[in-house]
Length: 330
Image (cartoon, rainbow, N blue to C red; front, top):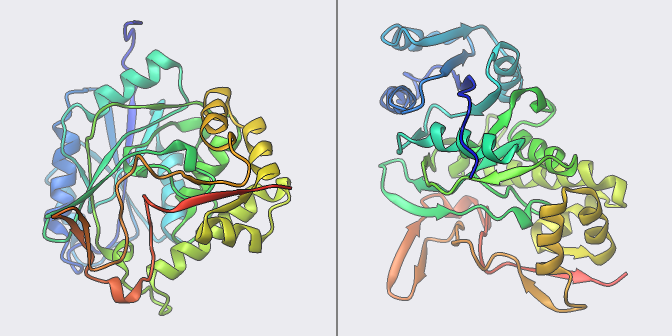
């Protein structure tokens, strides 16, 4: 195995706005400490604040290691792009103010995987918590599903900074659009065999409505379908096709064939082995990934693995298991 011969600078970007008013001061402090306590030493942590007015900026004065930039922005992906513009690191990772790394080796192991495999980005499993920090479920990466849904938690994703650019037309699914573009460009990803990310299922992700009255589920799902259409239009995928792919998990065989011809060889071969063997059979793409849905309770046998508080507003948000993909003939 190759030895890690360098310790490149890593940029961690956190987007903030009026955290005190939203009752998230404790969360952001936990997040900052989780970065500060990493075993990897060469880290810069950027706070991209949207001109908070509630005293949020005072929190950051307790942490002299932070680089804070505060000015109005035009949405989360505009703020994330500002983070990229200020980043000096070879690799960049976006860690939300609500989330944190529960393992101090997160950065060390991610850099090791990236450098030893000469990869463009890395990804890892994640742990989902509710607003009271109770365990909900695990989200295990499933790269073979990238053309239908977000294949991993973006808080676990380290990427070469030079490759990162978010499309600011999206309001909640710009990270998925970016991942689609990245993989379809042939970029190489590597799995980090460490569960180090804790993701809190609150805010927009939990089913709350946005300022326009759209539920997060409606907004995110519709934007995800749009991202699929935008990125797969060159394969003849329309918006209606994309909605069928995202909501019903159905894809035309020729589209899937064209996808595997485009992406990097390791992933394309994996998809071919898993999903292109049969003809008209239902293939369970999600057999290796736990279920996360908007039902009241999800049970495996006698064990309840999660509960979703806002299930009334969200018929189906993400189903990470038991949703089949139907590969259709031409």
